[in-house]
Image (cartoon, rainbow over all chains, first blue to last red; front, side, top):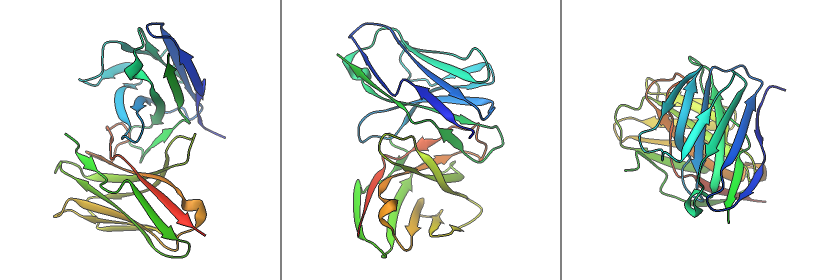
Length: 112
Length: 114
């Protein structure tokens, strides 16, 4: 089945220790997104790639970076996680001209 | 500034009855609206959408109504089933292109009691 896969599902890191979350897709979509969702809040877009073009939201902290080495994979790097970065991180894909975005199951990040 | 709001954090409904989930938006540029459903430990899944050129879209038990003048949309589920228990997010975008950004509401947790 075509899908969006996120690994790991749960990630524990230490305060200030860099961490990378990964997302892969078999849908061959040209747009990939990273969202942050804190408890009981709306998913908040961090950035997205249209093919290799990177688009950062204005209020995304510099602490968050992303890489998309190819169509299938996209990574979220948090350079120095703080306690406030503990959240669910959702990856989504979409096709320009398509109807909707397709979400992965998310990675829940815990910062100790 | 929340551009998309779901003012009811939770809703409890008896099985077989109608569930009505509401969503309000402030940005008049939004012209495409979606509802997503989210189970615990899973990502949101697309449920139904509506373009601003319509005021109603129906898919099986799910109907979305759009009132542009009131900047309000609602999702009706009839009849409600226990498997519908989940968090429902409404989202809005400018244009129906999947490359366009979605702005989400905070979600409403629906509980359907047997």
